[in-house]
Image 1 (spheres, rainbow, N blue to C red):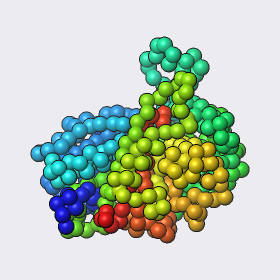
Image 2: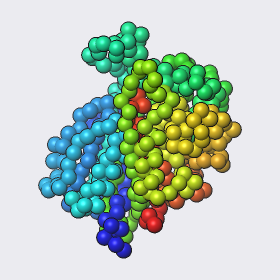
Image 3: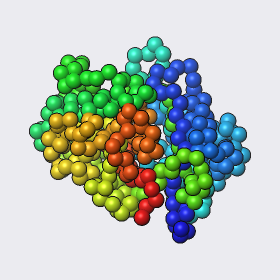
Length: 389
């Protein structure tokens, strides 16, 4: 094994707290639990950890001071950072680079959030500051929440390419079928296209069943070298490639916002680093804050041509037994919403062969996406069950 192979990044630990309507616990408390579980899952101790990368969601209350609660005394890598839903991929990439250049040997990457409050109907708010200039149209028109802005993006795709609500419903139905085999999923009961259409409008053309869950909880993973992973108990998940592609939102003439995302460039970079093509991918774990993001991501990664996503997802193509295993745990639409750690955690479970009733028939290579902001920030990972050749 060459030096580069010995130092290639490998995910060896996964820790997950209770997810969903988890009340009475702080974001920091959940983070500590997830990290402790991940390190134990890896067969290591907190004393083995020399790097911590952390992020929190809407609560935005995680800081580097957290490591004191863990009792860790010496670190060579520490950061609290966020690129929103793209953060999981960005953190894994940072950990991989640190391991490759010897800056750290064992890095914990973690995310936690507690947006749900018991007795409170909505977890989402609007910006406290009113933007000036052109961006003031958001407030003038009421387009101040992710639901409305993603509805605008979905509508643009519909107008341009003929995408329909039936196409989006196919995605929701398929992912619920996968969720039926996931004991951690918040929603496991089957749904139909008719159920999708009957669910209330959130922001036309998006129904309730087009929109992700809101969840409290925390997830952590442990990243170390392939050389060290060989002596640890869990089946290693190797980081073959990663890439980022960020496109700040520009709602102006000639903008491609809503039609094309940063998945185009981040996917190309990740696949090139991995040295594979889409035909080598067995499992696809996509950031699915809305059904629409699944459809546009499949197009942007190249699983189908631009504008043909609706036809591609039809006929149960993404459901168990379909042509492509997508969001095998139910995704953020049906399982739990932990930003980029939802698709990452499911990819790890699949590559370990630990999916149980939802285990994909082929699961040697996974493509994992992250999407943050309103289609603004993107990351892609390619993960493998074996070492990259």
